[in-house]
Image 1 (cartoon, rainbow, N blue to C red):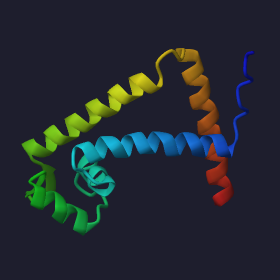
Image 2: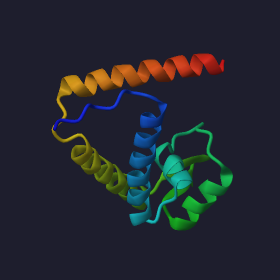
Image 3: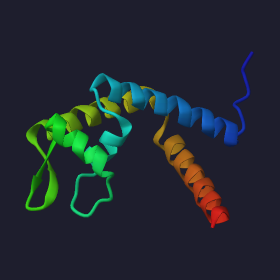
Length: 123
């Protein structure tokens, strides 16, 4: 007996977010990277707001250095970013397997619209 697909609602969006975040956290854990470290390492560009403690952690790990008064990734930092991005891409391929480009585009439009409306309500 075929099942009826669930109607899009906040609970489904939350469940999806939690499940995909758990996959992402597993990817980070496998590389010994915290979420805060990933954000800092992934967005290491001059002027980016990054907590100083996180930068200190990345400096201690040899993943970033200070160059010309700016934070820059080291070769090890570039390798860590590449490894995490590759794992994210592979995970995405598995998670989105069998979904048509039209389904993905529609889902993206719907979720984007809902997020925009929710952000507008928050002011």
